[in-house]
Length: 106
Image (cartoon, rainbow, N blue to C red; front, side, top):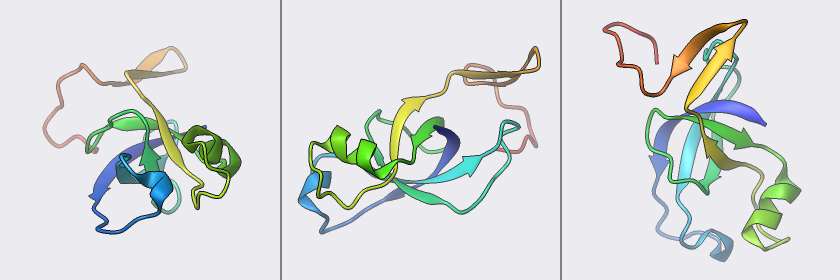
């Protein structure tokens, strides 16, 4: 599992049948300090995530295929959780319910 932040919604007029009824989102993986880490990932959304939300990203293709119920699905990443808070070394570094501060990154 990885942490990520939803950065874009993807609209596809045509997509593989395994993705029917599932939104596709572009997710930026982040480190524990919520800083970008690596390239963005196209993920199938199983949780109803929205833009800028911090999510749990599963990047194991066979597990994603199992969630879809299709071992032939061309999928390797899925959003499987929406993060409420992240605590690191005894301090909260992210809290979804906390008001955003002006100039804060992310």
